[in-house]
Length: 437
Image 1 (cartoon, rainbow, N blue to C red):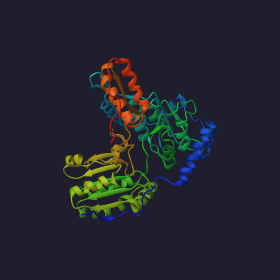
Image 2: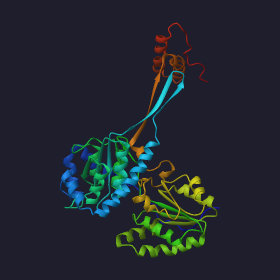
Image 3: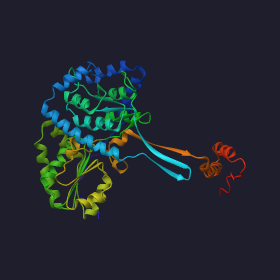
Image 4: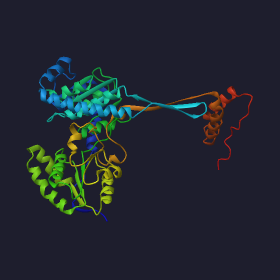
């Protein structure tokens, strides 16, 4: 049976438009052409800021002094958790070598990118968690240079908590820049920075589009759209906690989808009743975001079985997937498409968003079908190498020559021929393509 929807989305979230792309491309072109002059002009236009763009050591220390000790302790707690998890991830990648055939040894080696650029959303809120998630993982990966940029507030600059966090986590340079101009400054190596090899971090549609347009010239973590969350619940779930969790993720933005899949219609109806009450209790801006997201993008569906729930969840491929149901080990084994999985009532998505350890920069808009989130591995190139003896070439070279000629690549074939002629001049080999039918 198909899921029965008690609430369907009125709209589908859109992550890009032609107008956005054209505007971002124009800004990137201007910055690449004019350099720092254009960056300063856009900083004044879009950020309303004409202060120092590259923070000095004294400015970093002054910002840190403004951060209350209790907040510093919380930031360090989250940083330590993220760092420990990232270190464990790094240890899961091992360099190795293996003998493919006698005399031919091949191997794998992981090499960190030289320069990483981390975008940290700012403005109205201090997104310290994004600084922790992006800068810490780059540092653990072994990037030689880490730049971090964040939008400054007019006549104020970057929030002190963001500056403190980026510095604590290992940023080599901190830029008071937001939007496309911040991304471009890191990508193009302006203000004395090295050209970024990879750009990471969440941002608005302009930041996302800038990363999309720059992809290929450099790496990015992922193409990001509005954040989304799905909750799986059964008759053991607490409807009030489910409702609170849905609202907690809906407050991200007006177009942030939240979904509920359950095998219990009574639970679903109770959650539908409770969500508006939770929304009404939020501060004004959060309330406006959550109300719009719930009204336009949320869905609630009742499924016939837990297998149908799991299959439907895999179709959604959510960024965040929370399971508040019996037999958590079954769900862990069965579910396959999600950015990050949160098992049990005791494990809210907000833990992962802020402090628990696994990275919160995750695939959105169904991208979890084919990729995971930001991690140490994103900053590392997994490269291969090989070394052959002459004896190994005796078997590899003829096969290479014959396959190359079958494909019509005579130049390739002759690189094998020339080695056979040098190493085994007294022997004859069948190097023709043979029957290609």
